[in-house]
Length: 270
DNA sequence: CGAACCACCTGACGGC
DNA sequence: TGCCGTCAGGTGGTTC
Image (cartoon, rainbow, N blue to C red; front, side):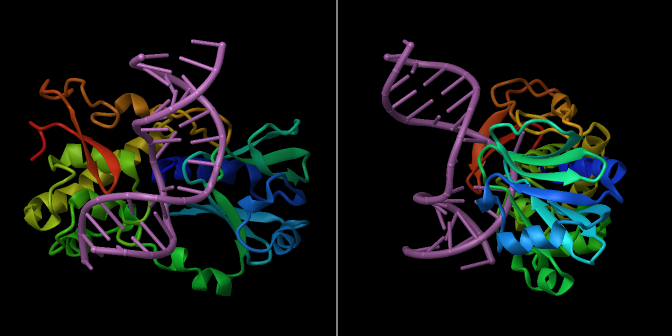
């Protein structure tokens, strides 16, 4: 569910609300949401202070006083919400009781999401983390072009590949490609170099605008305070198949790329 | 290297 | 009402 902007919004919110808090108790309501040993997980967190909150790709990273990192992947329906103590809800999977009496809750309807605590050595050997590509917002045009150019895969498949660029998902891939005027099914090596270079700027503009608007809420996404985002109101193509293009009026069409529903304007995108 | 599948799960929605 | 199929923001694995 959440892509880079949503995870970034959550990280910023938690940085404000839980930095320097201490985890007094860990409540495992659905133990299989933990990757690896549940005992280690609880032991490594209980009684520890959270020093900082960061993000890498779509991963949330909570830095602990011990140097270990609590990693959270929200996948499709995960939420990480901080608030006052209250009874657990149906989809709550893990709850962290903090020393000020507040509660940090990981909820996840579909249970694809997971949590883990890694010490630095372990983090280095975790393949998913280690193979993550660069952050788009920190990437140079030259490096982006060199990652994309010469590839014969469809351009959208490359945007979605976390090993190439970290953090882009179905929504922002479609929105960036619309702004760049490139069809999602276009082969990367057939896109003019200039257009590939411009694509990074469009992608980063979309990501930054989405962060400003607190992310996109299709159905499940909520920020760390439990509030919905508003960028879904600015979608140009995502979820708009059959509706008129906001730029030219032509009907937005739907196709499948990388097994993902993809929408584009047949007139604005080539 | 790339595409086409399936798998992991639940819930919402539309059609009949 | 209820049953059934379809679809959903992500990632990993297999096979061809």
